Amino acid sequence: MERLESVPSAGVSPVPPSTSPRSRIDADPLDDHVAMVRRVLDAFAKRDVQAALELADPRVELVFPITADVTRGGKPYRGFEGVFAYFRDIARVWDELEVVPREFHEAGEDVLVFGRLRARRVGGLLADMPAQWLFQIRDDKVVYVHSYPTREEALEAAGLQQ
Image (cartoon, rainbow, N blue to C red; front, side, top):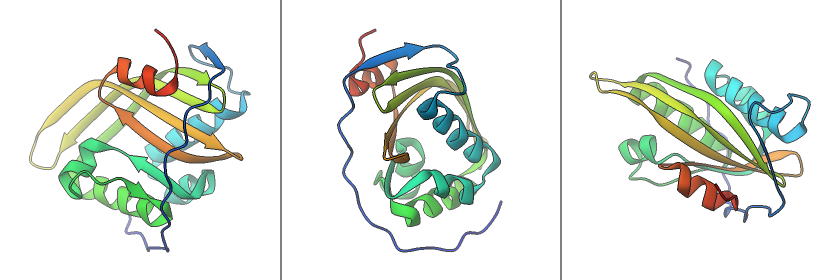
């Protein structure tokens, strides 16, 4: 795993989800917002922090409770410094951490992703569970990402009905 240098951080509040839903499974990769989210997930899979930063707003907020609970008392990761901290934390806490996206649903500028999270924690704890993430995109940059414990909570946060 790589060691990362820090940059100044800035906080941001989550942006309310857009209200015009358009859903699909395995969306066309030419769709801009879904394509951007796919690039973010690809950067994460490769642990390519530079690629992730290029897609993020400088005030991005990441809410990943599982890792944050272990490393920072549940506090969200904020700004570019938060992105660096998150990549450092996953390298420190997880021997393996794999995100497996399966469904992409659009809600205006937001993208809701359903898939699986596979993880092996330092010390041996294994996890293979359903996972869901809401990505909020504004001005062609990711401003907010939140992982939700249940599908229902993620759909509600995105303003989508099941």
